[in-house]
Length: 110
View (tube, helix red, strand yellow):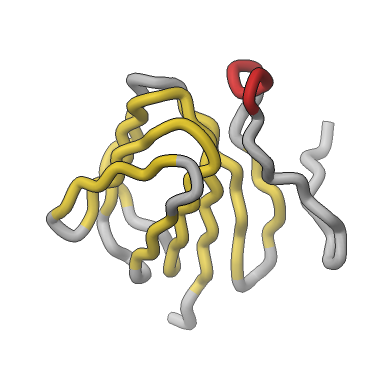
């Protein structure tokens, strides 16, 4: 089955999943040559080991709680909070409570 990516002008629902959080998987919402938006879903206790994104990133927590490790800091992100990192910045994520968050990657010219 092909993955559906939103088309230009298409409305995408990014409200908190609530009761549906447990049964939802990470999904790429749309992707272009210049940017990508993904709804990441993580279970409490899971981690994303340190890595680098190919562009600037914005992480917007929709629900739950994650700890974001970057630039020598560890910061909790809860519903309604976001952070920004420059391209190539090493970062890692620990999930403290079941969570979903938007990851936006804006690719920079190489």
